[in-house]
Figure 1 (cartoon, rainbow, N blue to C red):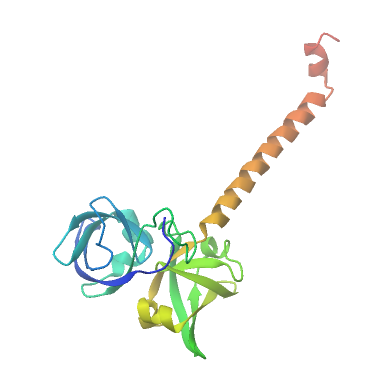
Figure 2: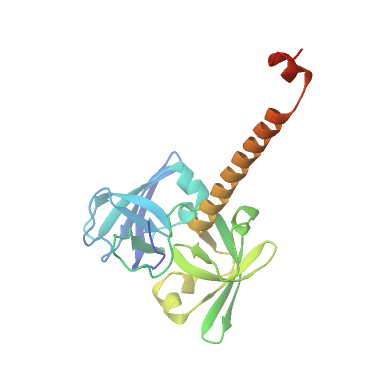
Amino acid sequence: MFTGIIEEVGTTTGFLVSQKAGNLHINARLVVEGSKIGDSIAVNGVCLTVTEFSANGFVVDVMPETLKRTNLGELRNGELVNLERAMSIGDRLGGHLVSGHIDGKGRILSKRQNENAILFEIEAGADIQRYLIPQGSITVDGISLTVVAIKATSFSVSVIPHTAAVTTLGKKQVGDCVNLENDVIGKYVERLLASQGSLLHSLHSARNKQHSVTESFLRDNGFV
């Protein structure tokens, strides 16, 4: 699990792609401290496993499904990426609970200054929109942000100067692709309610069946 509070901006130094999969090499300093092979590091919000350390950073494997569902497949050498190590028990939860499992991609529709903040409007599909609520949380390229407004096919987030300066978001432009992860709590609540609804339907059906007086019921119980 992650918090959506970016620790460091790294730089891609190599992306060796073969058969729609690849090894991503990233220059970084802070996130390698205390990390070991097999640890998880979120790259643009994508939970990836460290497979190797280099002199200036680390290496992760990226599988075909990840390239398809995220913006990592669009990376080129020398691009900046948001990095965060997995949280430890006892850490402050400065953002919100982030799993590192991307729900979908979005495109930046507009970027405008709003006093001291930058207001981004991001296009998002129905699979993302269904979990959005005003003032709720969403992760954009690994950054924990608050939803400002919701439209039919897009949503807006407001980015403070500090976040713009210490992440890649301040450098993003209209048309750029971003990784999106909905609030994991909302997804679990939906799943739980769906399961409860299914259970209640089954119990209701069984109860109705139990109390229905039919010819078959009378025959089975020796009345005819």
